[in-house]
Image 1 (cartoon, each protein chain N blue to C red):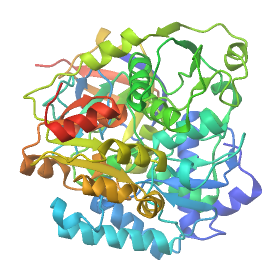
Image 2: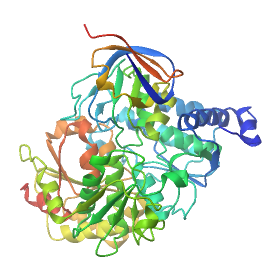
Image 3: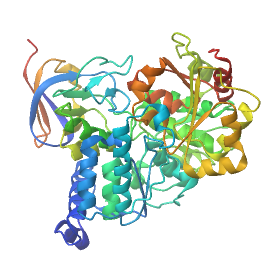
Length: 413
Length: 136
């Protein structure tokens, strides 16, 4: 990589040992991808919690905090693995809870703003067209690239933290025009009335095109999609397809037309998604032993409008005895949901609201599954249905209203 | 009997090959306490990746690989190398951070020159994977 005088000085230790190590690491990653230079970033969003970092990661973090590592730009955190208000009830390990507190303290010493959210793009920071950022998780990245027209690669925890410390990231992938052009076209002929439908589209498009460099261009849809719909679409594309960007003709900033989104090239493939495709997708989930005692609204965390919708759907109903219905959101949304009465409605129905976490990264999830004898997990999130597999749940995607019915009746269909 | 790779990072390593027809995520597919693929229905379900040279056609998801690779290396259950057909930045960021050898892009497809159980050597600087001996 070609380094600026300032970057050479950082590598020489002019800004201290932590920036030196961070930049050295970034150069190795940049070299792998053939990056020619660094680009400055204005914002960083990082994943860092004890469940994913483990003892080794925590030790590394403590060492870097002690070295005086500090964020050079605004840096926020992704959803974490422990909700301190519910950890005992969830049976989370007290030792790990203590480590999580230690980890948060380390991040704060480094000037990280611990927002604990995977919907930063809905509640914290909205980058503008062409703005370079360094974000993770994948759902945040695909939303930044696609809906805002900002520029980010998938930045894992250590890579995002390195970007936070140096204020820059290697210029490759979605920072470059050439990787942002659409590669195949997807005509949406389906109604797509529910958030789960949008996740299902992400599954149908992402699964057969698993590639970070594949960029689908959606077109032909009959109305303007909402922010929450694009959130579920993006999260599922990133999850099933490892994709970091999509275009939506007439809706996203780099897709004024199909031709423009494709960069003047012919699409490598043309797909059509119909209502029948969606029904086949829903029909493809095995119901296992019929267990309907776990319904989850999470991955991504719920927006305020999703909380409002859930509160309305659960009004006057009650989660069946012996079942668990779990909703996750961030602190800001929960505070507003409490003020507006949505949280009270959900809790009156027996729904558990977890703050600052995502269900699939909860510490101790496998023991939790075993202790509760859960076999199935039902959700309206195609992303979480896909990613929770290592914990050996049989997962079932259903529309939002159907999920609420399942939670309240115990009947899985 | 060689495989050429397009991009590579890490030390020269040797080990037993595990060849998957399905993509990989350390978060979606792997039990990060045992090093065994536990996702129901995964092509390698029940297989330990510890000390293996792992061939995956694609990467799945997920930001968590960055810390997860370091975590499994710390727990001494990490593979020796990841050989991807197509990967994503997270896998590379994670492998570099953890000091695990990683490559992307292959010619020819691994299934044409090697199989699970073969003993292979990965030389990142030479952009090469070499089959040293066949599975007994």
